[in-house]
Length: 194
Image (cartoon, rainbow, N blue to C red):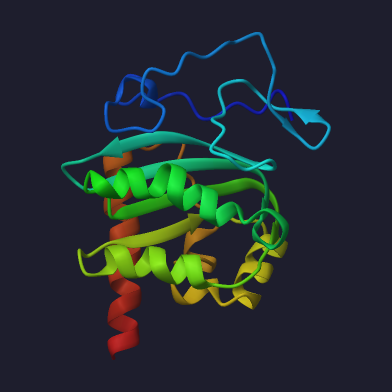
């Protein structure tokens, strides 16, 4: 796991350590000292610790004019034992929300397992942003992770599933991703209304 690095090709567009609104503002990173672990496995030092012992993240992009953020996660998402959603909400999402972020693209392709508890934090997260036209998308979740999330009723608050799996995003700009994801969400809403 130590060689899985957060996506870095947008650093010329955004760097969370240079963003005054980011919880990781002025954080200094090492390329050589591996201190964080998921269980017994060291992870790349570019991943950010937000309080969970098994889940780490990286804010890849935030645009306060379009109210949009892209966050990549790695590890095991465990709400059952460690209440990871609480740490994620308090230590990253609520900080971004205070600065107007209401549209969240959470890249989950490196989330290897999910253990749910209940949907209260997800409901709260959605209710905080929905009135502002906000949304949450979990992108490229592994099948077994998606199934567990659906079994916990999270899909009532988070866009997840077929339209958001196997999405190729690394060759796109954040602006193009936002336009494409909003197009998918708007089409889904139209289908539900009809």
